[in-house]
Structure formats: structure tokens, C-alpha cells
Image (cartoon, rainbow, N blue to C red):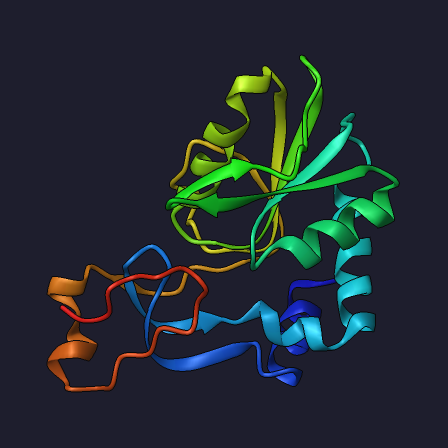
Amino acid sequence: MTKSAVEELLVEYNGLLNGHFCLTSGLHSDTYFQCAKLYEHPKAVEELGKKLAEKLADIEFDTIISPAIGAIIIGYETAKQAGKRFLFVERKDGVLQLRRDYKLAKGEKVIIVEDVITTARTIKETVEAIKEFDAELIGVASIVDRTKGQTDYEITSLLQVEPVTYEAQNCPLCKEGLELEKPGSRNTTVGV
């Protein structure tokens, strides 16, 4: 699947939005990737999961872990296509945790799969959530990587983009008076 094919899927299923958005990171942007719109179409998710699994095929790992809620479906489908176990972390009292009696073996090789990565904050939180198990983080993968390579992680992605982002207090879109939208799942204060 080429970069343009991923973009075409996002556009076709209204997963690539333009406007004024508050991202999960708290940054503002004129572009928002709403991968949840893809999740309405199982064939599209199957195709994306298959492509991510193919990109991970040369990596030896045991388990895929995804942060709830946005990445559960793509994480599950990637694990299914790779023939691997799947777990997810979820928030309790604002902190990502491995719950539901999920456990990892010491040294278990883990790949974290996200839908969209902007600052890798959720990846760091997921890593913290599994530290107590002494599992081994082997890699990070996503549908969309918008980090511009500015993280501590090497990310395997289907689409790497460099959309413009702004700190809330310096956002020209706010200064223009454009309405700010917060379509993501994490509760972030909207506004400047």
C-alpha cells in the first residue's frame, strides 16, 4: 500500500479533516486524522492491518499492545494479520494501565500499535504501563506518523506526514478566530 493509497482511504472515508483542531497532544493543527472513520469499514481496516503486519514481518515479536480507545481496532487487526497475541492498555484515574487481568511474561517481545502518533506521548504512557512486567519493547507502529522524526522511537508507519502544528498560545488559526474542534478521544482542554 502506497502513501497515496492510505491518504485515498482516509479521504474516501472522511478520515482526513481540514480546519482548526486541538490534537490529543494539546497542539493545534489545520489537519486532523480521524482514523475512527476508517473503522466503520472492516475491509479498509483489514487492508491496513495486513499492510502493517507486512511491514513488521521481519521483526521477531510476541504481542501487540495498543492504547484504548482509538488504536484498539487497528492493533487487533494488525495482530490478527501477524498471527500474534493482542492486548490493550486503558485509562484508570487518568493513567494508562494494563487491566482486565492481562499480563506479560518477563522478556515478552512487544510492539505498540497506534492509529496516529503526533508527539508519542501515548506511546510513552503505554511503555510506562507495561514496565512492571519487564517486557521488551521491540517497536512502535502506526497508520499515521506525524512526529517528523522527533521522538525517542523508530516508528513503522503506513503514512508519514509533516502537517503544521502550533502551541495553543501561538496558534494563528486561533488569532484568525477559526472555531476550534476537538474530535479525539482524550479529554483535553480546548482553547488558548
